[in-house]
Amino acid sequence: QKEVEQDPGPLSVPEGAIVSLNCTYSNSAFQYFMWYRQYSRKGPELLMYTYSSGNKEDGRFTAQVDKSSKYISLFIRDSQPSDSATYLCAGGYGGATNKLIFGTGTLLAVQP
Amino acid sequence: ETGVTQTPRHLVMGMTNKKSLKCEQHLGHNAMYWYKQSAKKPLELMFVYNFKEQTENNSVPSRFSPECPNSSHLFLHLHTLQPEDSALYLCASSQPDLNTQYFGPGTRLTVL
Image (cartoon, rainbow over all chains, first blue to last red; front, side, top):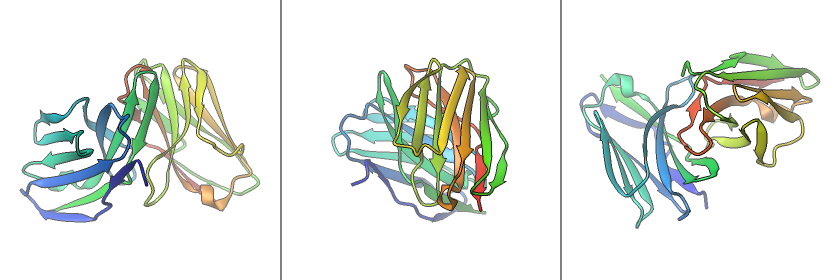
């Protein structure tokens, strides 16, 4: 079983839709979680990170973590064509173990 | 993305060639990473350096040889690669006790 599972998509939505991107993880040792956005032919760009269960909001983006069910989500409100990219979730151990374990990424296409 | 630079952006090499990838970070970080990104696979961590010391080698074949002369520079020396080594090679940096990693744009490597 992969430590971080993510549906590869592609996910296609109309402009303005609310997008829900999801990951599950198996490693209870993860202390924090990241979401990265990767445009075609670019490196991943850090979007959001969170250390605890609950919600964290930043503009149109909300990251949600449920440690009891090992489930993490990223919601995008009022999606724009410029949001079209691959979204990567990752879990990290924290402390001196500075390793991130990534999912495969979900390809999102927002149609104008 | 501009905080971490990588050169070259594209590289085509034969199986008998020797080449090097270069990464430079301008963020004042003390941890640097090499990742391999292949299609439909999660990012694979290859090497981790903390304060110029290698702290992680994720069972990477010896045809990949990393070098970290200082906290701002990281190299990946390549020799006698195989076609299956063709991928996007990403460099990242962070503070060692913080796990928010920042990525460069990557080097697209093709091994013929």
